[in-house]
Image (spheres, rainbow over the protein chains, first blue to last red):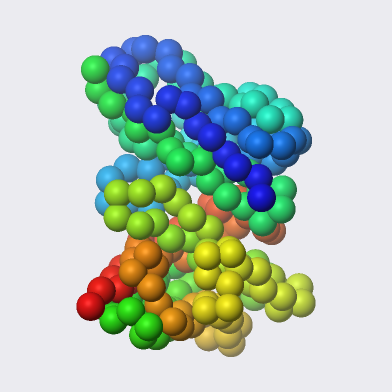
Length: 106
Length: 119
């Protein structure tokens, strides 16, 4: 099975900051990686697919990069609405998720 | 507008059974593979099961294989998850999820239905 590891587990930041979340796969997944945002009590929301493709309607301050085993999600300028938990997901063989990164207000 | 509405969650004793349903609307249900994803309280996301539209083939996470069965009724636009031999660690919010195109990137999710396994 492919294991997905996110870092950090928790990230404290301020409005306006540029933040980066990293996701590492235990083996190469090419670009078959997605990112989701989840707020408390809500279902996950798709942000990025195929490592760097922005889902329709997602603000352009979100971007994804990487291939193979290392990937990043970057938020260029944090907005109040961005404080949430973020999950990466590989989808080569079936799918599985990283453990999540909680983005907190500093 | 895509809508996915899960139901069937309940409190059940270990070893018990439950059937979850997901009523879909706003898209051509019969054209999409569908999945179940769960989230234990305070924990992360875990893909559980999927059913393909092309041949009806199914897939399961190792943690539920042999105990859960996914099925669909395209005439009713409904996805099901039959859960048998339930364990305490099956306690979770169960989401129904629709992919963007095919497969495993989920662009639409239901609100979830809570399954609690406890004596």
